[in-house]
Length: 101
Image 1 (spheres, rainbow, N blue to C red):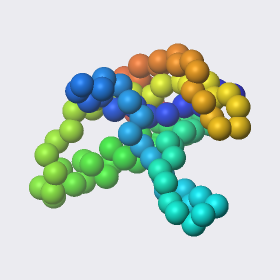
Image 2 (cartoon, rainbow, N blue to C red):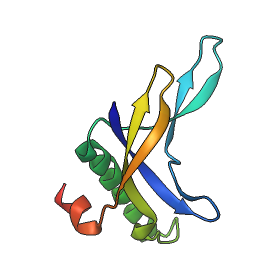
Image 3 (cartoon, helix red, strand yellow):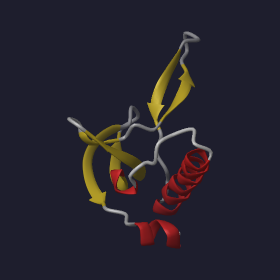
C-alpha cells in the first residue's frame, strides 16, 4: 500500500518523518505513531495548514522563521499489518507544488 508522509531535514539524521500522533494501546498507555496520508494532496494540505500556523506564529513574534526547504513530501510503501516501511520513492515538493495543491 502506497502512502505519503511529510519529512523534515535535520542534522545528523537527514530526511526523517517527525510528524506523529498519539495512539492509545491495549494496555491504556499512549505511544506515538508516524502520521501518514493516503494521497499526495492530503499530505500537501496538511503541510500547507502547518505552514499557515508557522507563518502566523512568526508574524506574532512567537517563533523564529522556518526554512521551507527543510520540509518535503515522500511516498512510502507500507507492507504488512505492522506497517513496515520497506521502500521509499522520495518526491521533492517545491513551493510551487505545495501552493498549487
